[in-house]
Length: 136
Length: 200
Image 1 (cartoon, helix red, strand yellow):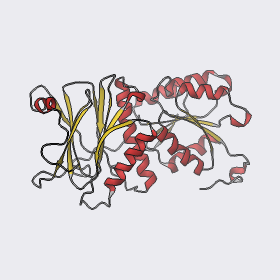
Image 2 (tube, rainbow over the protein chains, first blue to last red):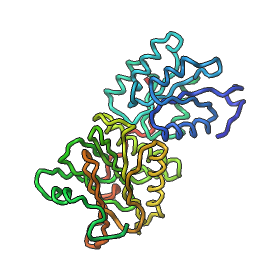
Image 3 (cartoon, helix red, strand yellow):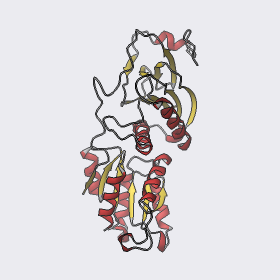
Image 4 (cartoon, rainbow over the protein chains, first blue to last red):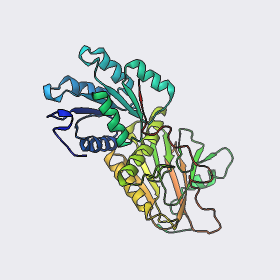
């Protein structure tokens, strides 16, 4: 897949924020997402994500957040809850991408307001399909 | 390091303790991850081309090891990117389990073992495994304090996670069983619903 500005009728590619404490994981996601034609904004934990979002300008407002769960300082649950408390981020799609797959943790993410749950290691085709579904 | 006897770096206390009652030896097979903060626990594993990362947090006294091959158990995806995603996953499972016990990511130190070139039908996956693990540690800024990787012989690793002490012996005796492989007789369960997406 390559960047096609006419894909889905958009001229500026959509922006995805990835939140993960592992630099290796962020690199893998960046590679996969840029291959899909998206722009990527990175944060290394929940606190960093919130700080980054506070300073965004009009063209750096993410269209989607993909967040890990287990992170220092503020985990994925905390981040989702904090974002849902912000009136302008109530409808921002948030996908959880994690090694966890327990029903209890999924239920917690759903209650916090997550849009979906993806189990690592991610499969790029399934990830692309999930992103297309929540972005449109 | 190809010495066979005496073992290359054997701390004397470990030699004595390793055979004394009271130490719990836990064998870790391919696809598994174990962590502990118990000073009496010894994690053991036998490696061929697989790699084992022994991570520990010397401040918290928490450690653990994994045992993986750069390919997802039971999945035929072997392109470099899928293998890398699986390796990152295997390392993350270990790091998360340690952090759940109270380890700090920035305190972690690592030893790497395995990655031999075995005559087991694989191309030199061992060296790819070792390269991946080194690269991962560098990217994650985790200090690599020791390693014994590559070569052509299997290894038997003993790691005391709470103390960060490891020893690795090369296994060249043909009477020894080959390193257990996930494919048989007991495949570890692949991560449930890997890559699957569930919408709320």
